[in-house]
Length: 92
Image (cartoon, rainbow, N blue to C red; front, side, top):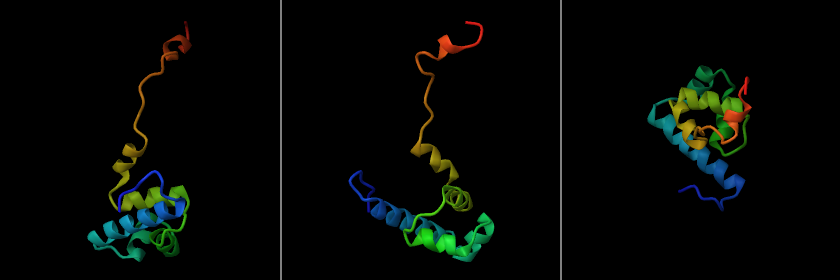
């Protein structure tokens, strides 16, 4: 399923959970494997896979274990300097 702006939070979490489960299975990892490597509880991995909200720190750890950490940059791309930044530099 494609992620759309009109999806509810629950639908987004469910789709994210499904995608992470598929990635985990593609890597032939169990939920226990991911939990151990991420340093989190297995129940946290289960909750995320079921589309339940988890702490962002846990999500980042799971992304790292699943080799998805670099994909986070696509969510919030870096921005360039703002127009007033040069004026705010020290010594100006």
